[in-house]
Length: 272
Ligand code: PAF
Image (cartoon, rainbow, N blue to C red; front, side, top):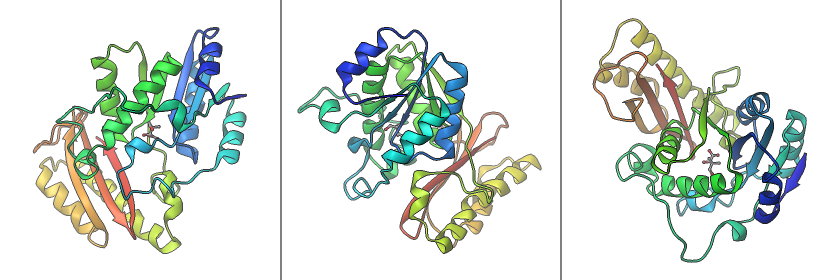
């Protein structure tokens, strides 16, 4: 595996590569990232993983400074998984003063996650657009756990006429049901136990829907009862176009939760 820091060097290498699978990350890799990486390695001639803790997608007061950084462990994970290139740019290489901005859409970029973290998705599309320009991937791999991010990246690809296939990858969970996230390291053992209520509420929702309960009000109420011990930010039900819906249609629904557990903000969802 080759580790490349400079954009110029990366572009030089890229010239000689045909098919490239790309997994953009902010590091602190876990089994969720690994599943994306393994899929890319399987499906592409070459795989590039980027590690860049992108400052523009963190709001003031969020966890940018304490976001876990584990470069040595990440390198090992990538190497063992068969990654060809680890791209690790610096903030100064990526961002410019008074630069041209790519913005998240005003509607779908400012509901749910975008409502509670206004501007977050501006930062996400800004960095992913830049990374796509540098890496020029054939396919790019994104987790369904960040469902709204995945939706907006697909929109960006369409709106900017990118010739990149976006590959959505299933959520990876620990044995107890907790969706894997780099932020899980913030949880004490006790908080982690309480965090399980999130996946429990989603499982309950899935069961209700599968038993024929298709009105969102009933499903949301049941979920909120389960989630009562947590500081819930939102429980919402959208269709696959991220439009809020009153009626659940199997095959076209995503149920999403964002909640704080002892100050750690966790998100999770289920695709039905
Ligand atoms: O999902 C993430 O880890 C980040 O939002 C991404 C896509 C790497 C952009 O910084």
